[in-house]
Image (cartoon, rainbow, N blue to C red; front, top):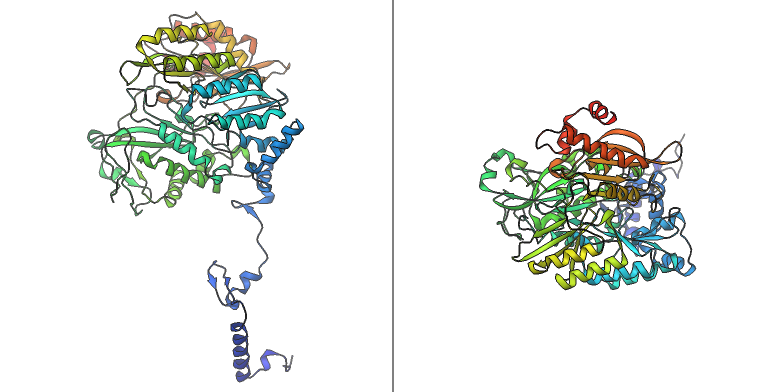
Length: 628
């Protein structure tokens, strides 16, 4: 086509230069100079170099990289309004005294409130107690809440917290405000949040601990409370701090487990120079890894990341025993003062990259599975100003074995003349009257402090030698005990179908019946045995970790029953239990357990524990033994 006088191709070179100058002058005289971004997100003052970026259609909105259309329903709810912004919804429900719809029920869990219909037409409150610590004053206050607004009792959880049930909608705002008046909180105690931060319940008390982990559990707790972005996880998350004492806190079942460990000259000599590895070899060293062997070492200034004798945390990741995985040792050896920073870096990576499409795959285990530990640690290092160093476990002193059932009985404290007393509370249930009485015992004969454990019981610390017998008698009058029992002290249970719609059986009822059945039996048992009752695959009571584990199911005739697993363990007995029986009726559990124990006692080798015996045999042989 011939050129026309409006076709740019018909312009002479002189005309083109004139027009270019004219346009430049026009742009320069504009009120607002042009500023844009190019395709690489770099600032530019030239429209020509950024026109394609500015004129492109807006990209699809995403949540941490996931398109809105691909989000699961819960993520869509969170995107439309952050659950922490639901206070007005809570007030409206309290004022109208009505049950929440599914969306609001999900949102209210950010405040620690769970509407548990159809099992109970009411709310459950879950209280956060970092490290399981609370005071007598707080226990009195919680007992009053349970009596005045709830069902008159509370339950110690397997995360060393407390649940109080049967609050009507009209009471929920008053319950939350009174909880705050006690210096407590339920914020983020459920749903897609970091659950109660646990720590060794005898921390600061035990003579055999390596490190008092309470300051780290509390620091983690308060960092979470004060950083809103940590309330946007793809799914729940568990963190635990293990002091190295003989009392287990089940840290190897957590998403992140910090295990106190000691490095000595002798243990270091077991590791060659090549074994010391930085996650990123050329990472800038801002603070040293190793510190003197003090009980609460603090960072010092330096530029070397080479470990030296001292106290550290080893970091294990990805525990989720309901999915048959314990936390795995990553080789990370960190200074205790760096633990919270490392945890926060890992949490923010999980927030940014965890699965937001499938809630069954939205735990840290699955991100580690997709990426591998190496990539995850490299990403963690990018968020930290100090180097991460890896060292094989052989370069650290081995952890002393945990003592099974060490949470019950009278134990000497590090402080001369003082004791802590472990109170066995069947399935963790305490009436308001019992709560008041336990608080009084702690006040009158201790220092007004109590510790909850992950084993659904509590400790009363700081009891002088002269008052131990008095406290023991007081506990017995409440219907509890402090006398160790190898057959019954390790029986724990989740909420069960009396308070959880997911449960296939009345786990607390079955566990209580087993406690009654076994009480006084099997005095010849030489080593403790754990029985874990859980109502569904979510495994709140860690059924795969029990010597015997029971998973609640509905049987074909609509009666309650259990699948039974055998040979699980934590800590130095770590292992996932194997399924041995399916569909056992709930009313047959007591007889089955008695048959299992009698068979073990008859067939064990000298000094053999139950877990050793059960793992020594093939499953078909165990089934034959127990079916005959």
